[in-house]
Length: 118
Image (cartoon, rainbow, N blue to C red; front, side, top):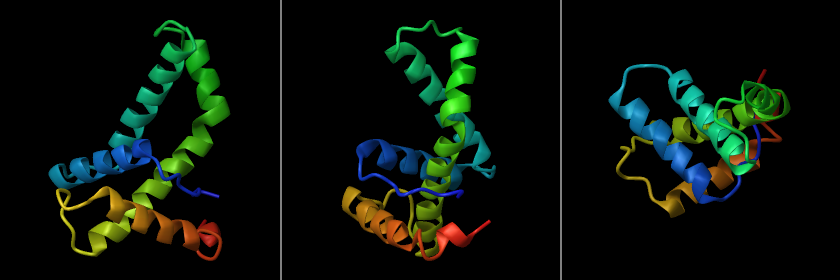
């Protein structure tokens, strides 16, 4: 499935805010933010596991093992953004509590709606 259940954590909220800030100020696609976030995840993986930053094989391994699931995670964050944006909100408006509420609603719709989107 192209979506996942989102965790209630600050990292997910931070990524959501990255999407909002980018999409509210740029007229480009989400793919730029997707790639930036995934690249940072790979850099964090390399650093936290003692690999050098130029260890391309370990980066490829991360992508093979985590790439699809991570992109599903990012897709789910973008669904939260889509709903939030359709509600007429601005990027400076979102609070942690509002994000959690939206996230919970999206998570509850995953099995009945999101899992049927191809």
